Length: 326
Image 1 (cartoon, one colour):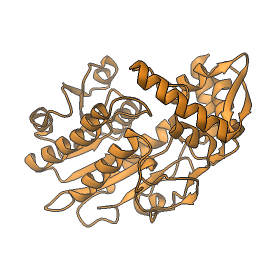
Image 2 (spheres, helix red, strand yellow; image 1 turned 90 degrees about the vertical axis):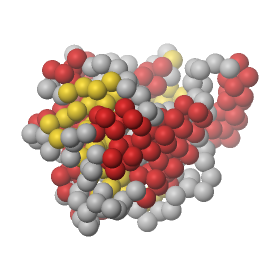
Image 3 (spheres, one colour; image 1 turned 135 degrees about the vertical axis):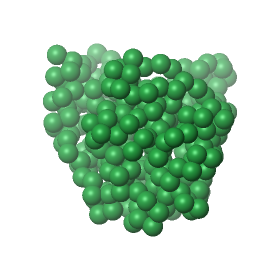
Protein backbone atom coordinates (compact mmCIF):
# COMPACT_ATOMS: atom_id res chain seq x y z
CA UNK A 1 0.00 0.00 0.00
CA UNK A 2 0.91 3.65 -0.29
CA UNK A 3 0.46 5.00 3.24
CA UNK A 4 0.21 8.60 4.44
CA UNK A 5 1.82 8.66 7.89
CA UNK A 6 1.15 11.75 9.99
CA UNK A 7 3.78 12.60 12.57
CA UNK A 8 6.50 10.52 10.93
CA UNK A 9 9.13 12.66 12.61
CA UNK A 10 7.87 11.78 16.09
CA UNK A 11 8.96 8.97 18.38
CA UNK A 12 6.22 6.46 17.56
CA UNK A 13 5.87 7.87 14.05
CA UNK A 14 9.52 7.29 13.23
CA UNK A 15 9.39 3.70 14.47
CA UNK A 16 6.20 3.17 12.46
CA UNK A 17 7.82 4.53 9.29
CA UNK A 18 10.65 2.01 9.69
CA UNK A 19 8.21 -0.83 10.29
CA UNK A 20 6.04 0.09 7.29
CA UNK A 21 9.07 0.25 5.02
CA UNK A 22 10.33 -3.12 6.32
CA UNK A 23 6.94 -4.59 5.39
CA UNK A 24 7.26 -3.24 1.85
CA UNK A 25 4.78 -0.37 1.97
CA UNK A 26 5.39 2.99 0.33
CA UNK A 27 5.33 5.76 2.93
CA UNK A 28 4.62 9.46 2.63
CA UNK A 29 5.20 11.34 5.89
CA UNK A 30 3.35 14.55 6.79
CA UNK A 31 4.84 16.63 9.59
CA UNK A 32 6.00 20.13 10.48
CA UNK A 33 9.75 19.58 10.18
CA UNK A 34 12.17 17.82 7.87
CA UNK A 35 13.73 14.55 8.98
CA UNK A 36 16.76 13.24 7.04
CA UNK A 37 16.48 9.90 8.84
CA UNK A 38 13.10 9.33 7.21
CA UNK A 39 14.39 10.30 3.79
CA UNK A 40 17.21 7.79 4.25
CA UNK A 41 14.53 5.10 4.68
CA UNK A 42 13.02 6.02 1.33
CA UNK A 43 10.12 7.88 2.92
CA UNK A 44 8.62 10.69 0.86
CA UNK A 45 8.20 13.80 2.98
CA UNK A 46 5.55 16.51 2.90
CA UNK A 47 5.94 19.43 5.27
CA UNK A 48 2.90 21.27 6.63
CA UNK A 49 0.48 22.04 9.44
CA UNK A 50 -1.90 19.22 10.36
CA UNK A 51 -4.69 21.71 11.05
CA UNK A 52 -4.46 22.89 7.43
CA UNK A 53 -7.05 20.63 5.83
CA UNK A 54 -6.09 21.58 2.28
CA UNK A 55 -2.42 20.72 2.91
CA UNK A 56 -3.31 17.33 4.42
CA UNK A 57 -5.69 16.62 1.56
CA UNK A 58 -2.98 17.34 -1.00
CA UNK A 59 -0.63 15.00 0.85
CA UNK A 60 -3.26 12.25 0.89
CA UNK A 61 -3.77 12.18 -2.87
CA UNK A 62 -2.73 8.87 -4.37
CA UNK A 63 -2.56 7.10 -1.00
CA UNK A 64 -4.48 3.96 -0.05
CA UNK A 65 -4.45 4.43 3.72
CA UNK A 66 -3.62 6.83 6.54
CA UNK A 67 -1.82 5.99 9.78
CA UNK A 68 -2.40 9.00 12.03
CA UNK A 69 0.20 9.24 14.82
CA UNK A 70 0.66 13.03 15.01
CA UNK A 71 -0.57 14.60 18.26
CA UNK A 72 0.32 17.01 21.03
CA UNK A 73 1.10 15.03 24.18
CA UNK A 74 1.86 16.11 27.72
CA UNK A 75 0.05 17.41 30.77
CA UNK A 76 0.72 21.14 30.43
CA UNK A 77 0.13 23.89 27.91
CA UNK A 78 -2.60 26.02 26.35
CA UNK A 79 -5.89 24.35 25.49
CA UNK A 80 -5.79 25.95 22.02
CA UNK A 81 -2.55 24.13 21.19
CA UNK A 82 -4.03 20.75 22.14
CA UNK A 83 -7.27 21.51 20.30
CA UNK A 84 -5.44 22.52 17.12
CA UNK A 85 -3.15 19.48 17.05
CA UNK A 86 -5.44 16.77 18.34
CA UNK A 87 -8.96 17.74 17.31
CA UNK A 88 -8.53 19.98 14.29
CA UNK A 89 -5.67 17.75 13.10
CA UNK A 90 -7.88 14.66 13.25
CA UNK A 91 -10.67 16.48 11.44
CA UNK A 92 -8.21 17.36 8.68
CA UNK A 93 -7.20 13.71 8.38
CA UNK A 94 -10.82 12.57 8.16
CA UNK A 95 -11.60 15.20 5.52
CA UNK A 96 -8.51 14.18 3.54
CA UNK A 97 -9.58 10.53 3.62
CA UNK A 98 -12.97 11.48 2.20
CA UNK A 99 -11.53 13.77 -0.48
CA UNK A 100 -8.90 11.23 -1.58
CA UNK A 101 -11.27 8.19 -1.43
CA UNK A 102 -8.99 6.51 1.12
CA UNK A 103 -10.47 3.32 2.56
CA UNK A 104 -8.36 2.75 5.70
CA UNK A 105 -7.62 5.05 8.65
CA UNK A 106 -5.64 3.86 11.66
CA UNK A 107 -5.98 6.47 14.40
CA UNK A 108 -3.53 6.64 17.33
CA UNK A 109 -5.38 7.40 20.54
CA UNK A 110 -4.57 6.91 24.24
CA UNK A 111 -5.87 5.00 27.28
CA UNK A 112 -6.38 8.47 28.80
CA UNK A 113 -9.76 8.52 27.04
CA UNK A 114 -11.13 6.07 29.64
CA UNK A 115 -8.81 6.78 32.57
CA UNK A 116 -10.63 8.21 35.60
CA UNK A 117 -9.02 6.54 38.59
CA UNK A 118 -7.29 3.22 39.09
CA UNK A 119 -7.66 0.62 36.32
CA UNK A 120 -7.02 -3.06 37.05
CA UNK A 121 -6.92 -5.04 33.80
CA UNK A 122 -9.42 -2.79 32.05
CA UNK A 123 -10.76 -3.78 28.63
CA UNK A 124 -12.42 -1.96 25.75
CA UNK A 125 -15.84 -2.06 27.40
CA UNK A 126 -14.75 0.80 29.67
CA UNK A 127 -16.74 3.99 28.93
CA UNK A 128 -15.20 7.27 27.91
CA UNK A 129 -14.38 9.60 30.80
CA UNK A 130 -17.12 12.06 31.71
CA UNK A 131 -14.79 14.59 33.36
CA UNK A 132 -11.42 15.65 32.05
CA UNK A 133 -8.27 16.11 34.09
CA UNK A 134 -6.05 17.61 31.39
CA UNK A 135 -6.28 19.26 27.98
CA UNK A 136 -4.55 16.23 26.50
CA UNK A 137 -7.17 13.87 27.90
CA UNK A 138 -10.06 16.01 26.68
CA UNK A 139 -8.77 16.52 23.16
CA UNK A 140 -7.66 12.91 22.69
CA UNK A 141 -11.11 11.72 23.80
CA UNK A 142 -12.80 14.03 21.32
CA UNK A 143 -10.44 13.03 18.52
CA UNK A 144 -10.93 9.29 19.06
CA UNK A 145 -14.69 9.67 19.09
CA UNK A 146 -14.63 11.72 15.88
CA UNK A 147 -12.25 9.30 14.16
CA UNK A 148 -14.34 6.22 14.97
CA UNK A 149 -17.49 8.17 14.17
CA UNK A 150 -16.18 8.80 10.64
CA UNK A 151 -16.41 5.10 9.82
CA UNK A 152 -18.63 4.31 6.86
CA UNK A 153 -19.17 5.30 3.24
CA UNK A 154 -16.22 3.14 2.22
CA UNK A 155 -13.89 4.27 5.03
CA UNK A 156 -12.82 1.71 7.65
CA UNK A 157 -11.42 3.13 10.89
CA UNK A 158 -9.74 1.64 13.92
CA UNK A 159 -8.12 3.33 16.92
CA UNK A 160 -5.15 2.07 18.94
CA UNK A 161 -4.48 3.19 22.50
CA UNK A 162 -0.76 2.76 23.25
CA UNK A 163 0.18 3.33 26.87
CA UNK A 164 3.37 5.05 28.15
CA UNK A 165 5.68 4.47 25.18
CA UNK A 166 9.42 4.25 25.81
CA UNK A 167 12.62 3.02 24.20
CA UNK A 168 15.78 4.36 22.56
CA UNK A 169 15.31 7.96 21.47
CA UNK A 170 12.30 8.50 23.76
CA UNK A 171 11.72 12.30 24.00
CA UNK A 172 8.95 12.07 26.61
CA UNK A 173 9.21 9.58 29.46
CA UNK A 174 12.99 9.26 29.74
CA UNK A 175 13.75 13.01 29.92
CA UNK A 176 11.09 13.45 32.61
CA UNK A 177 12.58 10.62 34.66
CA UNK A 178 16.13 11.95 34.38
CA UNK A 179 15.05 15.51 35.22
CA UNK A 180 13.55 14.34 38.52
CA UNK A 181 16.58 12.45 39.84
CA UNK A 182 18.28 14.34 42.66
CA UNK A 183 21.25 12.91 44.49
CA UNK A 184 20.51 9.38 43.32
CA UNK A 185 16.89 9.58 44.44
CA UNK A 186 13.60 10.15 42.68
CA UNK A 187 10.49 11.35 44.52
CA UNK A 188 7.34 9.43 43.54
CA UNK A 189 3.77 9.71 44.87
CA UNK A 190 3.08 6.62 47.02
CA UNK A 191 6.65 5.63 46.26
CA UNK A 192 5.51 4.44 42.82
CA UNK A 193 3.74 1.44 44.35
CA UNK A 194 0.96 1.22 41.76
CA UNK A 195 1.06 -1.32 38.92
CA UNK A 196 1.28 0.20 35.45
CA UNK A 197 1.48 -0.94 31.86
CA UNK A 198 4.04 0.47 29.44
CA UNK A 199 4.84 -0.12 25.78
CA UNK A 200 8.20 -0.59 24.08
CA UNK A 201 8.14 1.62 21.00
CA UNK A 202 8.80 -1.09 18.40
CA UNK A 203 5.81 -3.05 19.72
CA UNK A 204 3.64 0.02 19.18
CA UNK A 205 4.84 0.37 15.59
CA UNK A 206 4.19 -3.32 15.01
CA UNK A 207 0.63 -2.94 16.33
CA UNK A 208 -0.05 -0.07 13.92
CA UNK A 209 1.20 -2.20 11.02
CA UNK A 210 -1.00 -5.14 12.06
CA UNK A 211 -4.02 -2.86 12.34
CA UNK A 212 -3.36 -1.34 8.92
CA UNK A 213 -3.03 -4.69 7.19
CA UNK A 214 -6.16 -6.17 8.79
CA UNK A 215 -8.40 -3.13 8.47
CA UNK A 216 -11.09 -3.02 5.82
CA UNK A 217 -14.80 -2.22 5.81
CA UNK A 218 -16.58 -4.86 7.88
CA UNK A 219 -13.41 -6.30 9.45
CA UNK A 220 -13.57 -7.16 13.17
CA UNK A 221 -11.41 -4.14 13.97
CA UNK A 222 -13.46 -1.68 11.88
CA UNK A 223 -15.01 0.89 14.21
CA UNK A 224 -13.26 -0.42 17.31
CA UNK A 225 -10.52 0.79 19.67
CA UNK A 226 -7.79 -1.37 21.23
CA UNK A 227 -5.47 -1.10 24.19
CA UNK A 228 -1.85 -1.62 23.17
CA UNK A 229 0.71 -2.35 25.91
CA UNK A 230 3.52 -4.77 26.63
CA UNK A 231 1.14 -6.76 28.80
CA UNK A 232 3.69 -6.86 31.63
CA UNK A 233 2.42 -4.68 34.50
CA UNK A 234 5.18 -3.55 36.85
CA UNK A 235 5.24 -1.05 39.68
CA UNK A 236 5.91 2.52 38.65
CA UNK A 237 8.96 2.54 40.94
CA UNK A 238 10.47 -0.52 39.29
CA UNK A 239 9.80 0.74 35.77
CA UNK A 240 11.13 4.24 36.45
CA UNK A 241 14.25 2.99 38.18
CA UNK A 242 14.94 0.35 35.53
CA UNK A 243 14.73 2.95 32.76
CA UNK A 244 16.95 5.33 34.72
CA UNK A 245 19.54 2.58 35.28
CA UNK A 246 19.50 1.66 31.58
CA UNK A 247 20.21 5.32 30.83
CA UNK A 248 23.17 5.33 33.23
CA UNK A 249 21.48 7.22 36.08
CA UNK A 250 20.59 4.71 38.80
CA UNK A 251 18.11 6.04 41.34
CA UNK A 252 16.04 4.81 44.24
CA UNK A 253 12.47 5.92 44.88
CA UNK A 254 11.45 8.16 47.76
CA UNK A 255 7.79 8.07 48.72
CA UNK A 256 5.62 11.20 48.81
CA UNK A 257 2.21 10.72 50.49
CA UNK A 258 -0.61 11.17 47.96
CA UNK A 259 -2.32 14.06 49.84
CA UNK A 260 0.98 15.94 49.91
CA UNK A 261 1.64 15.18 46.23
CA UNK A 262 -1.85 16.32 45.20
CA UNK A 263 -1.50 19.56 47.15
CA UNK A 264 1.93 20.16 45.62
CA UNK A 265 0.54 19.51 42.14
CA UNK A 266 -2.30 22.01 42.66
CA UNK A 267 0.09 24.64 44.04
CA UNK A 268 2.54 24.19 41.18
CA UNK A 269 -0.24 24.45 38.60
CA UNK A 270 -1.37 27.74 40.15
CA UNK A 271 2.16 29.11 40.36
CA UNK A 272 3.07 28.19 36.79
CA UNK A 273 -0.23 29.57 35.49
CA UNK A 274 0.29 32.85 37.36
CA UNK A 275 3.85 33.10 36.01
CA UNK A 276 2.55 32.47 32.46
CA UNK A 277 5.45 30.15 31.75
CA UNK A 278 5.37 27.50 29.05
CA UNK A 279 7.57 25.22 31.16
CA UNK A 280 5.88 22.13 32.54
CA UNK A 281 5.54 21.94 36.35
CA UNK A 282 7.40 19.07 38.06
CA UNK A 283 4.01 17.74 39.17
CA UNK A 284 0.39 18.41 38.22
CA UNK A 285 -2.67 16.86 39.82
CA UNK A 286 -3.14 14.65 36.78
CA UNK A 287 0.47 13.47 36.72
CA UNK A 288 0.29 12.71 40.45
CA UNK A 289 -2.65 10.38 39.84
CA UNK A 290 -0.83 8.79 36.90
CA UNK A 291 2.38 8.17 38.86
CA UNK A 292 0.75 7.21 42.14
CA UNK A 293 -2.08 5.10 40.76
CA UNK A 294 -2.60 1.70 39.15
CA UNK A 295 -3.42 1.46 35.45
CA UNK A 296 -2.94 -1.68 33.41
CA UNK A 297 -5.07 -3.12 30.64
CA UNK A 298 -6.19 -6.33 28.97
CA UNK A 299 -4.68 -6.61 25.46
CA UNK A 300 -6.57 -9.75 24.51
CA UNK A 301 -8.81 -7.96 22.01
CA UNK A 302 -5.79 -6.74 20.02
CA UNK A 303 -4.41 -10.28 19.96
CA UNK A 304 -7.74 -11.61 18.72
CA UNK A 305 -8.67 -9.00 16.09
CA UNK A 306 -5.27 -7.69 15.01
CA UNK A 307 -3.23 -10.90 15.42
CA UNK A 308 -0.80 -8.75 17.42
CA UNK A 309 1.19 -9.55 20.53
CA UNK A 310 4.29 -7.74 21.82
CA UNK A 311 7.48 -9.15 20.31
CA UNK A 312 9.96 -7.24 22.53
CA UNK A 313 9.71 -7.88 26.27
CA UNK A 314 10.36 -5.14 28.80
CA UNK A 315 13.65 -6.77 29.82
CA UNK A 316 14.81 -6.99 26.22
CA UNK A 317 13.74 -3.40 25.65
CA UNK A 318 15.76 -2.26 28.68
CA UNK A 319 18.78 -4.14 27.32
CA UNK A 320 18.37 -2.39 23.97
CA UNK A 321 18.08 0.96 25.74
CA UNK A 322 21.28 0.33 27.69
CA UNK A 323 23.08 -0.88 24.57
CA UNK A 324 22.13 2.26 22.66
CA UNK A 325 23.60 4.40 25.47
CA UNK A 326 26.82 2.38 25.41
